[in-house]
Length: 405
Image 1: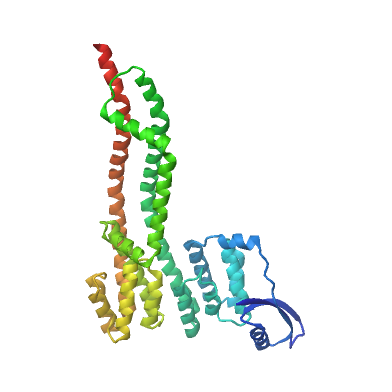
Image 2: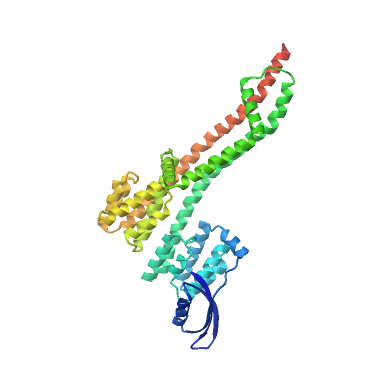
């Protein structure tokens, strides 16, 4: 797609209009302008130069919160009867994220030039996922854009809530482990050498724990760059392995087998799968297409393969519930509830109910994990720091015993 600058006149009023359109070629631009009742005077391709400001803006991350706010505000304005182009113009002014603002402005220009909203959104797939575009297309077809944007806002709000809970649960252990690492490094590299040099001047026998700590201190001070290099190489090796399909699948399977953490990961995947399928089916998206979209929302290779298998079996005539029951990755309840939905014609409602159930299970598991981690981390950090401190003071006790004799 290229960007073209145009100059044209309105047939009715004779007013001049200047602007830009993104299209495949000049002929498409001219056709679009003529469809709007304009007399085209000139069309030329916009020259592209390296723009450092635009480059930096494109590096800016668009958070889930940004997407939620945009979607909810858009839904509210459409429900209030605000015209599509005007709503996009207001949103581009209200949005604080510079990258999202540029995208909205481009979408507004596209829509103003006659492009469908879903097609305009599809040109920014790095911002708007396939699920988003699919439901907007459904809304355009059925004349229920405001309803679809409402559903999308609710869906992403639920995702944001789950993400926030996971981050909240992991923040405490990460902070504690980080503080413990800093404290241990400080003790081993600064406090311990000075302290032990003083003690060694007494030529007292050194206990085994103290020798261990001294070796650790010496290794850390003299070979810190080797340790750092090993950690960096291991990290890069891990990233390389998990970037390959087979390596990613092995890692995902390993995560799913970890007690509690694996259960949390599984509940997150099942919740997202149920809610995504529910919102797509309720919007009238065909089940095969819906499963394609669902696959893109999952970040677990085993479940992506399971969805692929379900899609293949459904295309061969099997029911959705049967594909869920057949797979070991899906709990029996999901398959049986889906079967009930198929019999009653309420598959979307049943999937939503199962998704809500998994949301509750996920909350309970996160609470359990948090309550377990706190005492375990306190004991671990206390034991580690305590061992170093005891190892430092053991020579003092021996010196005191020697002097008392």
